Every structure is written in C-alpha cells, then in structure tokens.
Image 1 (spheres, one colour):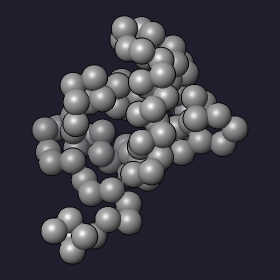
Image 2 (cartoon, one colour):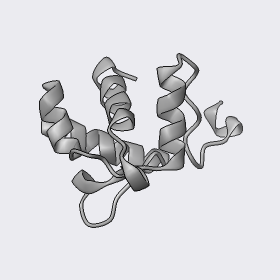
Image 3 (cartoon, helix red, strand yellow):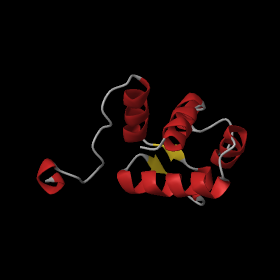
Length: 93
C-alpha cells in the first residue's frame, strides 16, 4: 500500500461519524490532505472491489464497510493488512 493510500484510509477511519458516514466527503478530505481528488476517487473504487468501501449514488459519497474499518484499524495498529473479500489463500499462490 502506498503512503498516500495509507494516509487516506486512516483519515477516512478518523472521519467516521454516526452511522459510519463521513463528516466531510472523500473529495474534501483528499483536498485537505493535498491529494489529487481523482486519485482519492480511484482509491475508493479500488477499495469497493476489495469489499472495504461501499456507496450508493456516487463513489464520492460512500462509506467504509465493516471490512474497511477492520483493515484501517489493522493498518493503524501496524498489523498486516487483512485479505480482500473473495480472495482465498489458494488463489494467492
């Protein structure tokens, strides 16, 4: 995981409000971090495929799933990143 990806995921975790929604949009958080907004939206899409992020109408207005929260907490605590949804050990090689 790249440093900007790690920082963005940890920021999303810190920004979770009630019902798991963010206080500020992922686009706003990206701007605040000095990250390209398109990079942030790309990461949200990537995490959707991993099962870490979900959204309804717009990927820019989504939320971290339980798996995403778990992954961010593990990252914050320096633990190994959990496996993505749908990936088993045999497929990893």
